[in-house]
Image 1 (cartoon, helix red, strand yellow):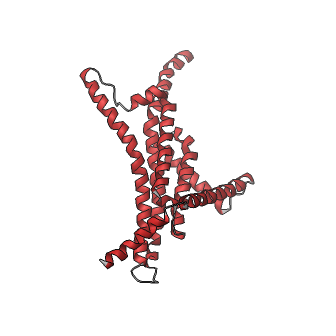
Image 2 (spheres, rainbow, N blue to C red):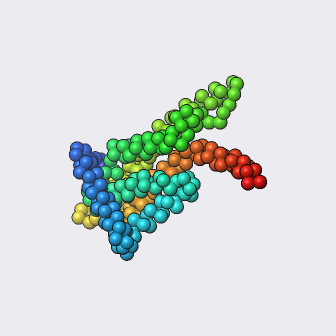
Image 3 (cartoon, helix red, strand yellow):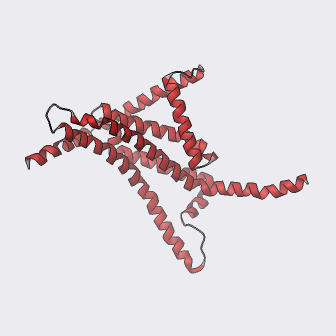
Amino acid sequence: MDLLQQLNLPLAEAAEKEIGWNIFFYSGLVFAIVLVFATLAKKDLKNRVFTSLPTRLAEHLYLFLEGMTVNVIGPNGKKYVPFLLAIWTFIFTGNIMGLLLQATPTADWSLNIGMAVITVVYVQYEGIKANGLLGHIKHFSGPKLGGFMILVSGLIFVVEIVSECMKLVSLSLRLYGNIEGGHIVRSSLDSIIAGVPIGGLLLPIKFFTCLIQAFVWTILTCTYLSIATSHGHDDEHEGDHGHQPALTEAHA
């Protein structure tokens, strides 16, 4: 029993660190780091200096996210890059902070659920903007069915609404579980031999986890945006194809 209590001690200590106002301090610190990085990158861009580290990192990150959005959403996805860039930089910086400091905001579920709410609400807003309010609501009912099969559409609508709500849980818990779980494992390893930081051996794996979790959140956001806005984009393409014969006739 004593051994189990010793192994559970890091978990209790980690939980205590996340209680209180620490989340506001660490979140503010992440915002400050991101703003300083963005200011340095923007300053060099204005001066047309592309050799500094902040500028080159910002350029590569932007191009990476732009390529990802174009591949997932299409050419219209470029307008979502600023939002995805803000999400990615905040999550990645918060995750990396956990490698250097005692706590990190992304290991607090309350912050993660807040970011999940922002992400899901933004997706719904873009869906309404692309398809209209009525078209966005119809999107949840699946393909148009008539007669008795309308009950199936009602069932699909309920399932889709529940699925949208579950996105809040899946996004927030995935990030929280991976980041907080890494802290617990590292603390447990450090407590095996007093004064010997065995948990430091996990730093390369934890760094890779920090990178992957930021990527997973942004790629899922791209997928949600693609699903929510694809109907509106399809209509635009259909409209373009519909006008082509008329243009051809006019030239003829």
